[in-house]
Length: 394
Image 1 (spheres, one colour):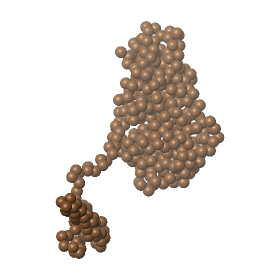
Image 2 (spheres, one colour):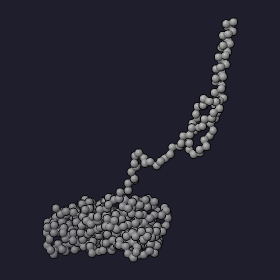
Image 3 (cartoon, one colour):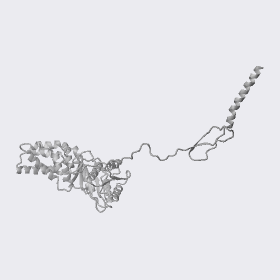
Image 4 (spheres, helix red, strand yellow):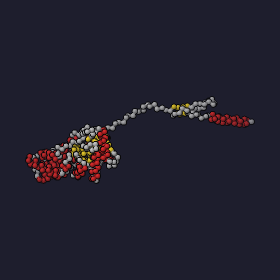
């Protein structure tokens, strides 16, 4: 009997536990969705103690951005720092030492001959050879030496310093210092001055365009570049970089596009923005002379719809020596070259090419490049150049 009572009690306990598990689950109901809309989060409340009583959902408002400033203030982006080119006044004097180093062999060779007690025929021939080896040119050398010999004979010069001074004067005279070497960069008639830059690729043409821009900016001019060498994508990128350094705008076109169109747009933009000088870089391919002539001729004609071209500069590599004269002739047949820029004079002992260029072409050398630095381009000064060419007499 005791076993029966124990079994009944155990059965009752099990039934009670089962009911306790089922009833709460039956009472739990899904909470209705929120009717508030928007970005809210609904949390489920526990069931109320009273059966049949519906508990409202707990609504948590979405986080609102009140526009508060960040904990760490972000500094505004810094404006790009522009280069400040060196003033052009006295550049040739400052760069003279660099030229003197490259002409050291030439200067010392001449001075060693001039220091002899007696200048015989052999000595004069050595002087001629030195000048010719410096790319002065045969005709120019013969004329210079003939005048120098006459001066030494008439004046009875005996000291090295006297003869050196007389040679320096003859070299300066051969450079025709009276030639107009000013750059025509002054705006006029409501439009900018237009400078066309020509020369073979590899002579440093595009780089020189950038340096010329710096020269003008250093002298207070405003500049705009026209990247009309559309056959080399690197040329447009390069000149744009030069412009960005000094705050100058660059007008460029699609790669392989019409150079004349780019040149026209550059001058038009210069007129619209009131720029002082527009510098137009052109292609320099010499493989097809007729093609080059047609191309440059078209560029000039199109640009002149705005007005005449004020300056056409020919870029020559001084290291090419006499070979550069043939290149120069090709360009002078195509366009009216008004001045020459000799680059890489610091890398050659053939500085006499300046004399040869002027004598053969009748065109003044206006600027010379004496290094790879951005401001290593100087207005050409005949006297300072000759002093550097000859070196010290000491």
